[in-house]
Image 1: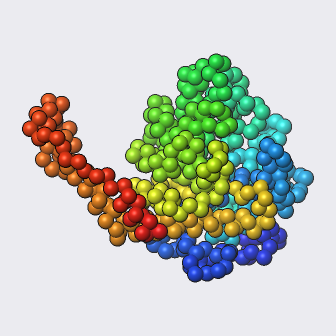
Image 2: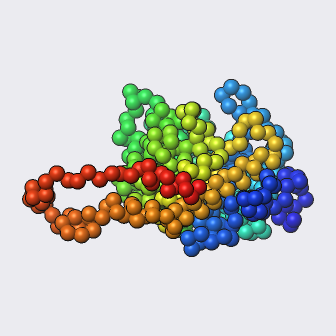
Image 3: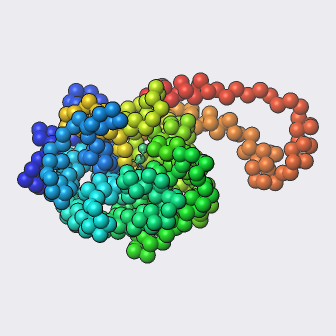
Length: 441
Ligand code: XLS
Ligand code: NI
Ligand code: NI
């Protein structure tokens, strides 16, 4: 395989192929058939599956109670440039073996940060040139880039929301470099996830000033990227908490409000992450729907939480029923605007075989594919849509239609209701709706 070059990291694993649901081969897709057309589009184009550099290649399984458990063969070199190239080789070997078309990164996933900004910039530019060649040779593309403005201790009080202008400026410099890298690699989108953009205590926080500063900062980033020819979409990735107690981009509705408040609505959409939705006490499908209603359903970070744990466990998606409900929203709202399905998920700390990374992504892709097929069948074959329309039929004619057209006043409602008596009781039929979805799973 020309793409892999002289070293192979995932030995003994070839290209992952679609073999259908009756296959017993653990290293084959059972439902994700890239060229299969569903609702007028191939699965490949619906999903634009992406590998997340950070979890797949950088995360070795450390947790607050112990160090990493995984020794990755691409992380052996002591020289940071060599280590970054090995990691890039592993990335492209993995993505092409999976048959995926995209990847996503934070700046310092690609190469370790150096001790000065200029040296860090040089390192990023070096690895970007290397990645560019690998992209050209393989056809793999960059779904989005982002900047890690949360791990370095300098960001302990925030990045764009930091009370010290010196740190805000330092974050600006880092975002400029990450934007340059994303643009150089033809990145289709750019993400802002504000991990430290929030507060731990309101007592020491001027919330209004911090939020205004973020709004200004995002406008500066947008203006700079546009001036450099970037035509992609910017995404805000909502998350309610973790690492801060309260994050400003709490959920989709909160983030949409900020996008509009700071005049970013023509350039920004949302990147919805499953586990962030559930941390905000919402379902994934709720967050997708809120984003879609605003015309801002841009991209998805696919993973799942754990019902018994209250944090961002970033497990690979495997709940077909829940994903099917999400795919109903996805299909009905016309899919994602510019983005794709990025597996922002990690194998468990005790999943230490390299093969496990493949099994995890296969399971994730199959979950989405199967859910898409279910949602499409529900829409095409079941009475689901007509039942839903029926619930709102009273707005389609007569006074209901006049109400919908904005032609009635409150007095009109009064006159109408006065002549009608008590409205008839109409069942919501939730169990019927649930049964219909289950019938197609
Ligand atoms: C963390 C976020 C992060 C973003 C990118 O919870 O999901 O991984 O996707 O910074
Ligand atoms: Ni997350
Ligand atoms: Ni994410």
